[in-house]
Image (cartoon, rainbow, N blue to C red):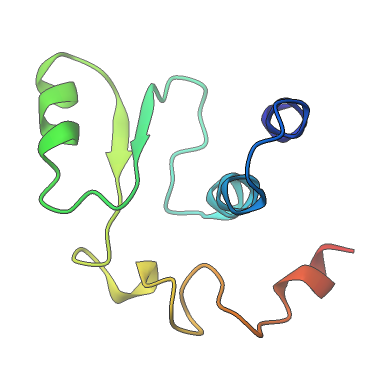
Length: 88
């Protein structure tokens, strides 16, 4: 549903891809009670403020794990990867 809405809004393809990749990431909570996901979080100041306000969510940055590095083969995706061919 989210991807269809993004396509209707003519969102940039990279944003649509990030949403798809986050949905497939087992480290991101998949329950419906998640109220935010902070990407490229840095020191996580936004997440900390939201957690203190009582919201539930997650914070993701390459600082936390090299698995979040978008420029490496073990990151979400990288130019030249076969990710697109695995979607079909």
